[in-house]
Length: 99
Image 1: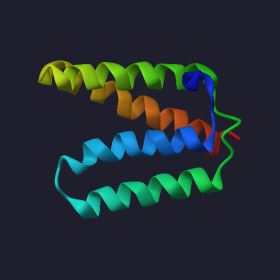
Image 2: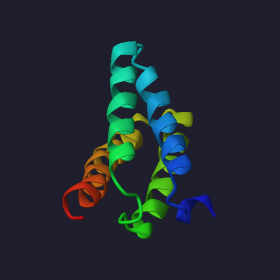
Image 3: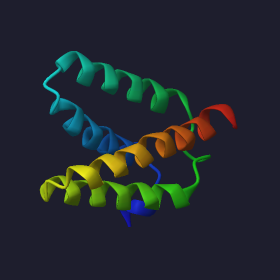
Image 4: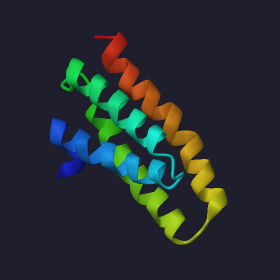
């Protein structure tokens, strides 16, 4: 199951998921900057140290966010994003700074 696999391919898919939403801002500089930062992180750091449990949560969060956007439920989408961003930061920083 993709939710339980921590591979560079999965992180490429994750990068493109986020890039799609960033592209909605119609700011190509911001989208390119996001991709560059994402690639720098995952080219330099080992994925094996990331906890698998959070990887499963990420997939569920992405599914719920897509659903909220599809339903045009702005309040739910904003709430999910407010949770997803700091949780993702903590997840990534755990691999960078704790390893």
